[in-house]
Image (cartoon, rainbow, N blue to C red):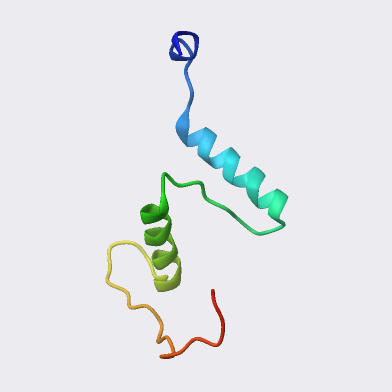
Length: 70
């Protein structure tokens, strides 16, 4: 721990590069590393709602019963 505490890590760069590597391994367009399930769910909801910055956007209508697990 003492040795690691003496090193600098740019967390933005680390998260961006780890997401890129994971996406590459999974064969998907993009991936994001989060600190837990809550931030991941917030990001997923934001992706579904779409829209731009600074406004209020509604999620698309979701059927009462989904045909399969997502």
